[in-house]
Length: 174
Image (cartoon, rainbow, N blue to C red; front, side):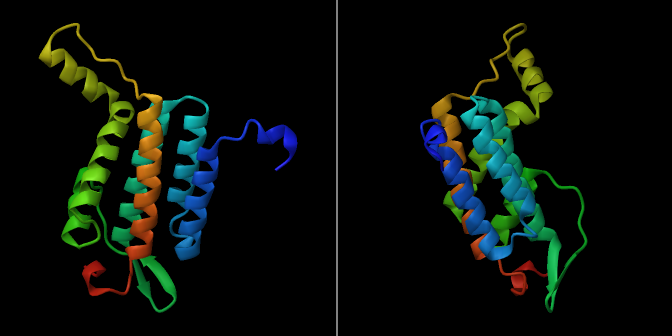
């Protein structure tokens, strides 16, 4: 890195790159969406777009669980199995049932989902707030510290998921 850029360098960007490299070492082709999304989450955070960062973290978890659920391996070839459109909440329950997520990881994934839902499902958030008390709509904000924590939790969880996944294991065969 050149000296001009060193002073502007944010360690969170390096974290995103490190997570991406870990994922690539397992299967960079199947998990390309997760790689792109965690890197985008770090760029959003760096640019103080913390709600957008949370949405990207949510999407990274969702894309990874969806990929793990649908892709099957036949020899050295991967192919999609049957799938339907499932919510992230349903994918988390599925992953826990398959032993892919333990209770702590389910809690992390659920927290990431809920924080990301603030931006991903704003209409539903407004509707909930209006039903509680008319004209009292909560702000859609994610504090910087929460954004940073979400990125670290997401990166750790993504690496654990892709390292744990074994498409040949019977628990992933439908």
